Length: 152
Length: 105
Image (tube, rainbow over all chains, first blue to last red; front, side):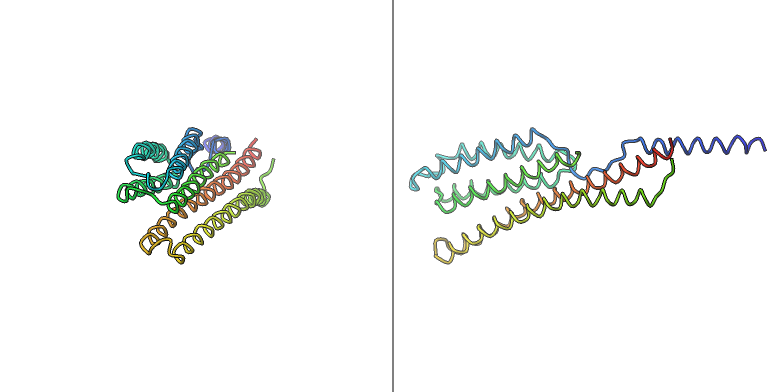
């Protein structure tokens, strides 16, 4: 029948075009956020600021480590951490990095509160927390760097 | 050109395995580093408490803090795992779509 002779080739053409479209379309999955070099820069910048802050504490004789002397430093770094957290939270598929910065912020705020309460920081705590933040920022940087490989 | 699903599946499987082998190796190495960091940190904390350099309150606070640092480190391992899955899946999809395209043309 004439209708059938037209329909069958037409169906084949439609199917072929569909499969060609599928084959040539950008069909990919995405489980992580894209790498962001500005976030990596920020991680390095904030990690340096935190490390220098603890270095200043440790260079100061224990009896002179009043909170008021370090208050501005605490507030500045708190602002830096807030900015880094915001950058991470607005990126889709980035909840792990967002949580990492949230934890960094929590621990920084804890340090600020404890220093204010005790009006001093001992060497043991200062050294320990300096090292903890080093580990935190290394983890953040490694996590961000891993995202470069995701699209290679 | 013909489309042999068995050949395509084998190619997809090889690609997935190749990528996962490389990525999992890196994740394992990172895991070892995290454990080493943890060992050193907990040892220092335990010794400080045993020697009496810190009291129970500080010990408990530092332990809770340590758990949060570990969480940060493990979140990086999670990111690395997701990256591995993304790469492997996309490599497999790429092989399939290229095979289909070749069969159509």
